[in-house]
Amino acid sequence: MPYFLCHLATEDGHRLSQSFLASSVEECRRHFEREGFCILSIRKDWKKASLPALPFEKRVKDKDFIMFNQELVALLRAGYPILKSLELITSRTKNIHLQELLRKVETDVRSGKALSESFASLEKEFGKVYIAALMAGEQSGNLPGTIGRYLDYAKVISQTRSKIRAALLYPTLLIVFALVLMLILVNFILPRFAGFYSDFGARLPRVTRLLIAAAGGLRQITPFLLAVLVILVLLLPRLKKNEKFHMLLERAKLKIPYANRIWVETAISLFSRTLSLLLEAGITLLHGLPIACQAVPNRYLRSGTRFLAEDIRSGEPLSESLNKTRFFTPLAIDMIRIGENSANLHGMLKEVADVYDQRIQAKIDAFVSLIEPIIIIAMGMIVALMLLAVYLPIFNIIQIQR
Image (tube, rainbow, N blue to C red; front, side, top):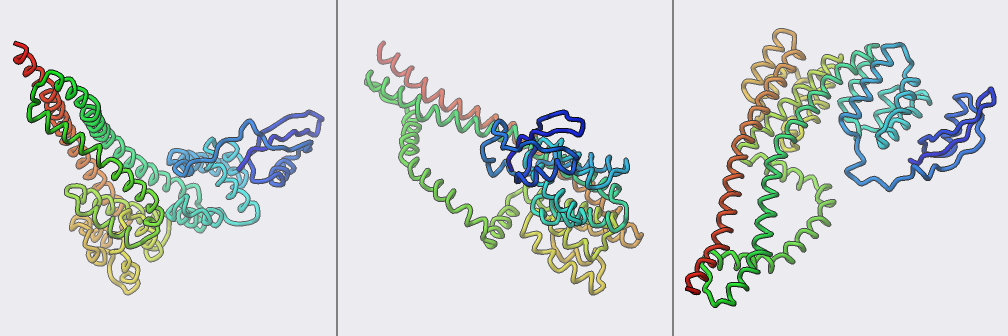
């Protein structure tokens, strides 16, 4: 969506220029006519023209979306109409992709659609949970309160993701550094030393010969590895559309030791927190279950929840139905059963999510505390091996010279 440079005149004769993001000149003209300006000229603002966004850039960041909802809640509670609130927030939004989406929502609301209906066409960007929360807020007449509860939910989810990324960042950097160091030593340093030693007629130690042979083998298979990588990159878009491939990949993730428990507990936490939010917003259990099932990130685990709505419709308690999924733990099922018996299901679901969030964080902290010394020890052994491969021939050369 491009920027347009608009030259305007006010009712008292003052002229001003303003850059405005719009899909077309007509949309830009309509916007300023509603504001009461006299439009002198409109043209594209080439100074703000930018290169097309990369695929990973065309997404709404969590912090930007949370900020948008915080401002929306504040304006609605202050008595501003929805359309005016959207106009004010959209004009200040710095994320260009989010601003484009909000322009579409603003246009739909102006044409008479409800806020939830306007966001429904952008479900892939904002998610079913957010749209369901908006719908429940409109039906209950308490839209600011419902969005506020969604904000609490979104903040917890965003903080959990940030903690996982931060915890895995340091081990990942160590592994990458170790691999780069090994590649540099094996491919550049050892071959130079090999030529230097051969001039002296020294026989290389076995460690050095093995590393040089490994470097030669690695250089020989590098073209094959690059060809495989190119093929995978070309096939990846097709594989993403293949449901069987996705299911196979998600099932394989659950076979990874230690990580499988994190995947399962994450699924329990997200399902419970999402369903708790929907029930608290006034959505019935029968209508909230399909949305909560979509919050389960692993597709293989999600496939085990497809019968939940049918079981609830036939009169079965939620706790008994969740027991059939085979990934809900006895602790989670017992807590949900207590919530059903005490008529506080949404509160107990929130407690389940909090408990498993803490367990996930404890597992991640334990993993990081174990992986760091393991990687450091492995890097030390690699460096020691490289030093032996380099310095042992030097000692041999000294003995020959003597």
